Image (tube, rainbow, N blue to C red; front, side, top):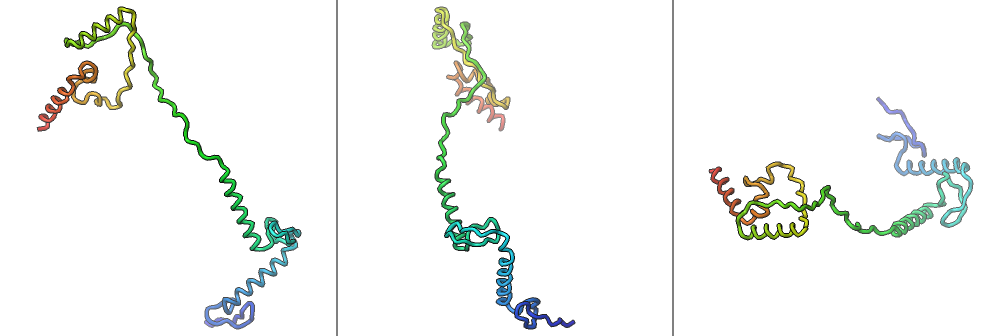
Length: 192
C-alpha cells in the first residue's frame, strides 16, 4: 500500500518517510508562531487597552487577568509578589512557649479523724509512737488521713511476692527485704 503524496502545511514540500504534516521541526515551529500571532490579533479586541502595572505602557491584553505588557514585566511583578509575601510572613507574631501547666486533679479528699488505727507490733519504737499519737489525740488533735491512690489495673501487681502492700510499707517496711529474699528463694526452689 502506497502513501499518497502529502505536502507540508507551511512550505508545501512533499513529505517523505514517517512525516505526516510538516517536513522539518523548524517548519513546525514557524507555523506555530505564525498561528499564535494570528490568534492574538483576532482575539485582542475583546479586552480594552490598559496600562501595564510595572512600566506603565499601554497595551491590549489577551485576557482580563493579564496586567503586565511583556514577559519581562510579568517576571518583575511575580518577584514583587513573592517579596510582599515574605514581608507578611516575617510580621507574624512569634510562637510563645506554653504557659503554666495545669496540675493533675484527683477526685479524692483528705479526711481528718481522731480514731487512729494501729498495726499490731511489740517493738519499742512502734509502741512509743503509738503512745505519742494517743496523747496527741487526747489533747484534741486530729489525724490527717490521706486517701489511698487508685490501684493498679492488673490485680496481681501489688501482691508480687505473696504478701500485702501494707506489710511492706508502714511498720513492716524494716523487714521487707528479708521477706522479698524469702519469696525469691521460694520462687527459685519452685522452678527447680
